[in-house]
Image 1: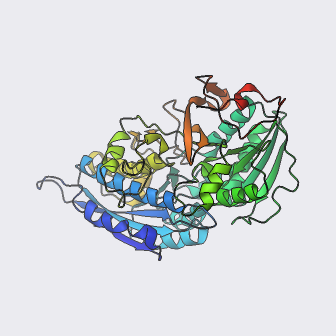
Image 2: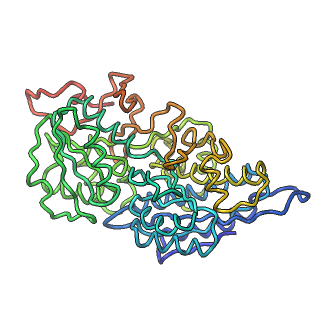
Image 3: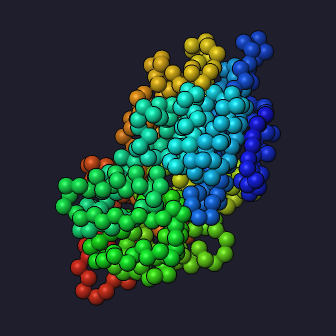
Length: 462
């Protein structure tokens, strides 16, 4: 059974109907067991937006990933509970997220998966935190939530302090001598820009900051006061649709050719050049060949992720949208970002439910789930998930980094796809380890004769 409410977004809402049929038979137990607990689990998922936030393909894929996770995890848990998903699909802003959280509270949910966007977390928190309702985000990375004001907030994604550290390490490794830091003027972009600047403090690398309007004004003079040399890098901290508008402006003003080069954050790496209709984005991707970005590490060969990808590949492409689907694109390394982290957000609730019922022999409530996430009892939620070992900091709600796997990877735009560079191992404060010196990133070119750029900038990866 599924309980859902959407807000006139047919393109995203349609897949919800399949959730009803696919979830109804999950979570069974022999008839001599204790009575089944029916648990309402809320979801605040993003809708696609034209000017801000999330692109349509990414929103659709996250919806598909939600359905995949519920159907793969269901048969694994034989305890006495049955999950009733309550789904809200809203834009990535504080106001709509607050309204969605209020509706979920009225439905007596015991927890919430999402929101995805940092800006939406502010609104959801205004409702969920006073009510004591735990919620787990799979893509909200802003460090500003690591405070007592967000003490029911948890996440399976790593906080921006890790991403900022990797970006600073890349700037140093690629021997840039100047950074121009563009950022979208909202919670995610501004908080991450502050973090990146702090990581570069003391490196003797000058950093200039340039805010980008939210939503982006494509005709604003974004580049008027930016003087770029061949040893300069432009870091772009922005949500996917903001990055699209920014780059349309950059292409129009001829600021995507030598010596301009961009290093995007994970929001930029989430911009999908395949999913948009029309020639406009095809032209845009051709103008951006060689740009690089940091995105979450995807353990694509993990045995814990494989059951979900195998299930996904078996489904009809029209019903389960996503690049992970073999009927659309068979290559695993082209999966869009944070799918594994979304699966683990749902998985964390299932682990909590199982522990509360089977180990503690208690009724599942929002408070019981919150205590479980806070490690009461010890190791109440700690599991090997789709994205690695998952456990939470009991004070800040951050995901703990436990298994030594890098939190982020380097991506290079080749064709219309962000390609992960597995030979580039990002080790945070320990710098960058290039496992294969022949695996170079592709700098936008052509470079002029006599360029003094380091070798790794000049050679194009195969």
